[in-house]
Amino acid sequence: MSERRRASLLRFATRRVLLLGPFASLLVVAAFTLIQLAPGDPILLLAGDGGTPAYYAELRAYYGLDRPLPVQLTRYAGALLRGDLGQSLTYQRPVAGVVLDRLPATLVLGFAALVVGVGAGLGLGLLAVQRPHGRMDGAIRLWTSIAYATPVFWLAQGLLLLFAVKLAWLPLGGMTSVRDTGTALGGVVDVLRHLLLPALALGLSLSAVTGRVARASLLDALQAPFVLAARARGASHTRVLLRHALPNAVIPVVTVVGHHAGSVLSGAALTEVVFAWPGLGKLLLDASLQRDVPLAMGVFLVGMVSVVVANVVVDITYHALDPRLELR
Amino acid sequence: MTARPIAAVEFTAWRAGQRSAIAGLALLSVVCLLAVFGPAMAPGPWVISGDVLVPPSAAHPLGTDDLGRDVRTGILLGARVSLLIGVIAASLASTVGLAIGGIAGMRGGVVDEVLMRIAEVFQAMPRLFLILVVVTVYGSGLWLVAILVGATYWPSSARLVRSQVMMVRTADFVTAARALGCGSARVLLRHVLPSAVGPLAVHAAFQAGGAILVEAGRSFLGVGDSSMVSWGGMLSEAHHFMRDAWWIGVFPGLAITLTVLAWSLLADGLTPRRS
Image 1 (cartoon, rainbow over the protein chains, first blue to last red):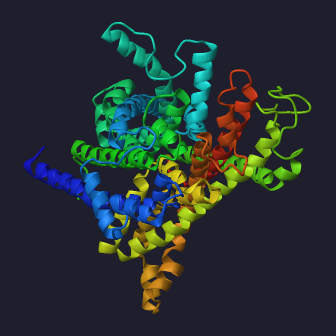
Image 2 (image 1 turned 30 degrees about the vertical axis):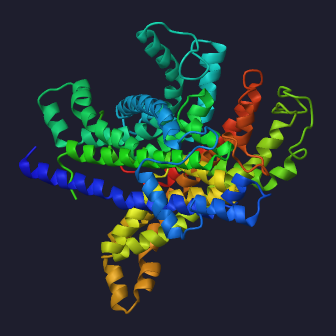
Image 3 (image 1 turned 180 degrees about the horizontal axis):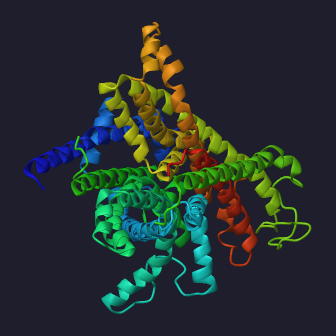
């Protein structure tokens, strides 16, 4: 990487990271507004409706709810900055702790699904470009349309029914077995066995997008001069495809998944519910059903931040890996 | 790659597009018919009408669910929710996208930068997370969810419109319109935006399918509009009975998949192909 390129990449990265500031402020204001607009009075919820006006006023002052809205907003933002997401009503614990307990499970599922989704997508793409607009290509196009149209939770239910209920090859749900697996290796294998079906469900539904992007980028790469040059040097068709076209198709495919991080998170939530996977999605659903507003808001904020960070990381990596891209 | 005459490849691609669009339209017409006439075709309302978990039979062609409700009735009544959410969310996204993308593309500069940054915030939202949070606070109406989905869909529409606008805003016919004395609003509305409508319509068809999936997802989670039957909600209830009664899981899932597929096939067929 040249010195100039390095400097401009650094500028690009700094700009992207700095833009997170206004983004975060917008998010905090949005979250605050959402809570303010909520119907119902938190004080009545807390104290019941039998209290005297003086008592209500005292409580209001205690929680700072009698202060002007801008003051409340500042305090809210300050608390968020300190990592204080409030207290969960159902867990009776700080929201941040509850959310952090569940975050790893979702990250593991998301990453495994990413591997499956990118792998399947590249495989489909490689098959499709054997003969563009041929029979196989058409079949794969239809397959990706169907994969896109199939609700991920329905697919998950089907996989569960087949592999866990009928064939009983894999566990029904959860992340670990109740019984002790003994060794550390046994523990890892146990988690992997639980992970396989959820990752497959989410990954297959991702392959609808990755398959199409892989096809398009492989086609682009196959028309590039460097492929012609490789052919001229006598490289076989397989070698051209695997050594020259494929590496160029991986970056766009991973990038598009990164830009779909929000959808991946939504899909993960649905998959988690089907397989009782103890991640953020399941947590948010439980919080929502129990009307635990601080917890639901906390999961939402953490989810948003993860998605945006994923986007920024993907953007910067993409620009670092592809020297042809203009840095702006 | 085997060499084929380019014209032949182009023709194959074009024909595939035609077939795709026709198949999509045909499927969608069926769903529309169900949405309009479903309640009239159904043997009765969505209530207990037989024994529980009866397999498909003459009386109940798609079987009954765990409460003894006729699954066929649910499928017929659920079409309305799916179609409504798809059309409302996609129209909303297109309208907002047309306005914001048009302004951003025409103005450029700071206005463009600010609007696109706001778009990024909305685009990054994990839809289901947003819906769950809002439902926690405000309750679960169909309209509310349609608006939420529309609110997360407009950024991609706006980007599409913006890029179209940027392409044509320096075209000769636009310069000519300006020279004739058209104001900037008239130039935008009458001369620039029409060129964005075609691609936007294709995009909207994709979004309609996506919105149906989002609605199905949230109904599956059990936070659907309880005043309406929805296919996602049926799947949610089916979850614990699928082992013994495949029909309560299979038919609603097929209904969702086919409806979303219809929108995608239509959009796919209308997309111009390159060879």
